[in-house]
Image 1 (cartoon, rainbow, N blue to C red):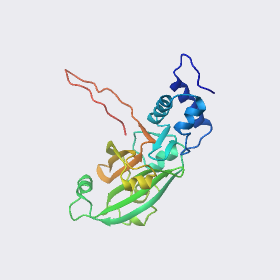
Image 2: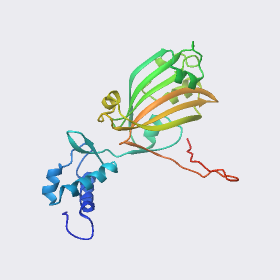
Image 3: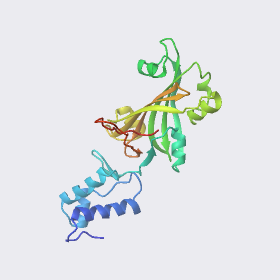
Image 4: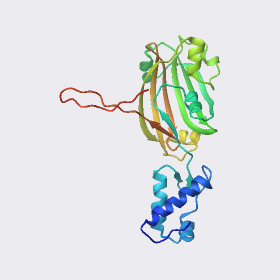
Length: 252
């Protein structure tokens, strides 16, 4: 396939050619030809190459690493906004989840976690830090806080499995609701190393407090690779009266 003069802009033609390469020839994290190589191969200007590559980067099909080049991005995993564990979420979408426990101990919770869990200053909590992967590729870095008193011996369980399942099966604590906040931030050096992304690469951050029969049982912050994870939300317009406006909402 070549880039030709005609009604279709050259950068759009080149984008389609590169997209076919991504989908048919190249594997995730493989380098794409350099700007100089693309200019010579397709007889187009540098501006055309930059426009085509830039569009694919913006679409999440390619990613850049400063000083190294441009690479094929892995396909994103789309998640519905609902209350489920990482393990359940990945399996439902046909991916193989795995977990590495980076740390687990019983300690005093910091003020934000203590407040979220409704703990007193003297109450103990479990801190569980894990690296979550899908199909062998790192997906999320997760730090969870759980109250120690109602969950004796939790750290002796297999924390590479679903904590939600452990709470339900071993303690009779079924998580049935949650409050969650989501924002974006750049990867700091720690998370860049753990998630194998460049420093300052975009991450989606989820902070969630989950409840079992009205009692807070988990306060967790998860940093997800934004190039591999996206969220789907169903929005409904809230019935209004008078001049009050309707705001967006999502369903867990």
